[in-house]
Image (cartoon, rainbow, N blue to C red; front, side, top):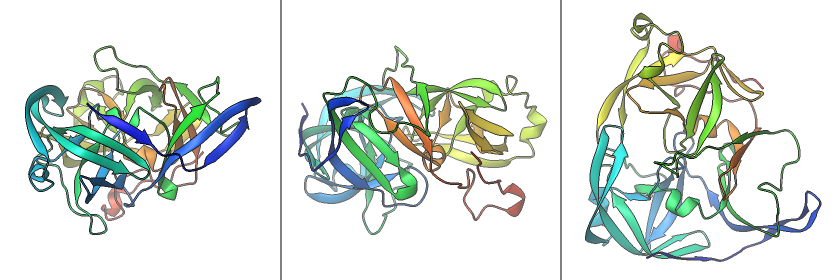
Length: 318
């Protein structure tokens, strides 16, 4: 059982979009403490100061196995069957008596125990112990503004529409939900002018395309042999090979990115990862029926700056 108590801070909007009774209240303004990759925020788990990855692609919140005893969590006899990069696997469940994120407090919180090979190095001296998934995030409207190191948890009241802040300068797209995985948020994109459905996954370090799409995208195996090779870890601890491939374009409506570098590997879905989140301001309503995307400024959509010069990527344009 999970009991959430939201302590509202300030009302940030009223009289929105001609709805005089519409108000948007800030539950929490979360500071993102890292500069790239999946966004990481601070939290208190049973009064232990920790950091968690904010992961829109994870149905459940996750705790790394080696952190269960360290945090004094209760490991239950429950088992959950889930899906990771390596396929289906079974994971245990741990219970935290309290989870506090900014002004939001949760009691008796269940965490999936997984991610044995996922890096958990400290950020600003605070240990990264797991993932904050959709079981927590789906309670709120969420405004991702990673270029400003900010994630806002919001609640609306008296608003008829899904969206009440931006009136112009943004792209809007419907989100589809798979009946088998209803928490997965899928939108329409185009890669090299080819329509594709992609999952919004802030927990993925990079955007990904399955090898099954090679023919669809007119990419030959010989082209992959010229790409940089890397490895991808899933929460199930499985490791798969991936290729860093330079495409011509990535488009969401009229939102355009030139020469994006996107991973190709043995995945079951295309993914828009944290590299996309760092290039935009994103509003995700609580009902998760659509997404609103607004350009922030020109950034690099590609590998870390330490990548070899031959693998450099051009800046995004709008």
